[in-house]
Length: 210
Image (tube, rainbow, N blue to C red; front, side, top):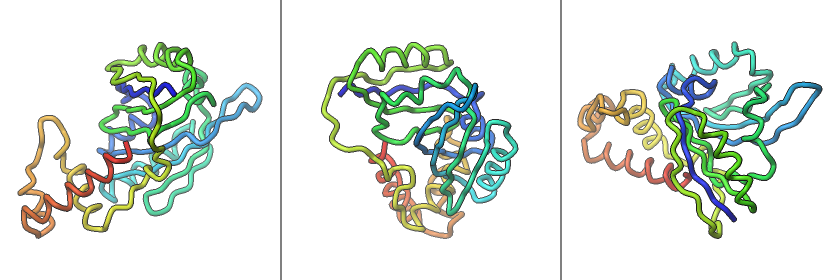
């Protein structure tokens, strides 16, 4: 299949705006799309990573948006029914296979998709080029080894989850970084080496799902 990875700045789009406003990482899949009258609807599911306070604010923020028709959430996992703008309908084409979750961080969307037909990928890329910060990372004809269906919410231990969420919340992944590993370790009351180990294992699990 043709496998493509690309990103763009979507900080003015609903999920991207939510990610940036509340300093969260959002990982998700588009599950299905359907037309009803003149409107196009999408079922999506995903996970929100960040501080509990910011996650709660983000859920309330999403519930108020006119595009969100239904939303359910439990233990960081959310599933939504969205009335989508027609400009984005192309992203939900059944021609695409999502190899790994869509990742939204600091408002930037990263897609990893595949299709049997290169022309379908190229058509989508022409649409994506219109977004600011667009970058094509790779486009290759290759065999897919795995699809990260469970990658929306990787199996992190409680300590790994706390370490990663604190790092996201306090700006460790911002550029330039707003905090050091040593400072983060002190916040959790553990040693530098222990915190670093928890964070690195969390990053490894998350990266394996990209």
